[in-house]
Amino acid sequence: MYYNESTIVYLNGSFIKATDAVANPYDQTLHYGYGAFEGIRAYDTQNGVRIFKAREHYDRLKFSCESVGIPYPYQTQELIDITYELLNRNGFKDAYIRPLVFCPPNMSLTKGKAAQLLIATWEWGAYLGEKLLRLHTSSFRRIPPQCFKVEAKVSGHYVNSIMATQEAKDKGFDEALLLDIDGFVAEGPGANFFVQSEDVLYTPQLGSILPGITRATVIEICQELGIEVVEKKLKLENVHGADSAFYCGTAAEVIGIESLDNIPFQLQWKDSLGAIIQKAYKNRVLEQEFRLQEVA
Image 1 (cartoon, one colour):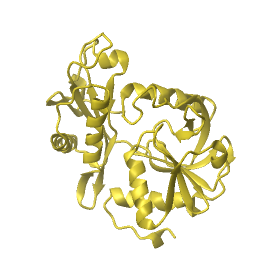
Image 2 (image 1 turned 120 degrees about the vertical axis):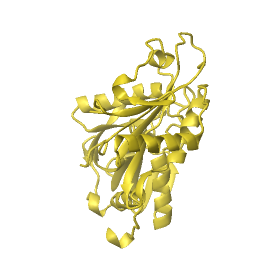
Image 3 (image 1 turned 90 degrees about the horizontal axis):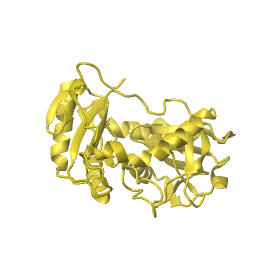
Image 4 (image 1 turned 135 degrees about the vertical axis):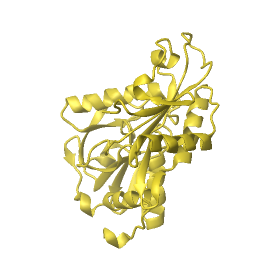
């Protein structure tokens, strides 16, 4: 699904076949989830292949590593250049990109002694699909900031996400919505959350969520279009039966939500603010001009 015999990855300074890439079974990251990664997308725009917000993603990778003590000897522009070369070697124009910084053998519970770098890429459609999502409020809570660097994109953090998503799917839903430790709405397992009430968008405030790069892009788009966005603590009662809602993230892009806990949202997706933002976001990543009247 992710690679074949001709796929190229970048591993520790070299472009090699994915089938030749190996890891040490004693790597600290393998045993403890002590690594950091990014999810990035490249698009075939009218101006050629473009990695969307490449600098912001690689700057966050640096931040994530430094937040948990993983050495980070890389320069952002160097990694951007390597990534464009990797896309070219694989012949990809629309692609998902996964940089991973992982640590060499170390069985002690101490900070990383060195860093290793993998950059992989593959062609991947919308992570959560194209249809509206049916969400389930997870019984698992988001890891609180008192216990973890929640603003860092660290590998081990995503065990929490896997558990929440699988629980939702086992119950017949498409995806989960997680609450924070105090019972306020947090985010999806791999995406940020927005809900519409009348003509205002609300999104959980920072603190117990990942400050998503796509989330920031959505807020930028709203500012440009004159759509009011309020960051606040949201209770489930603020969400159940609201007008509309959507998830956003690099992998998911912008995807509408049909219902939460089998309670439908009131507006048809085509009439929601989310539909406008979905169209504007797609135009943004494809470097196309967006006109509000196109979806009005």
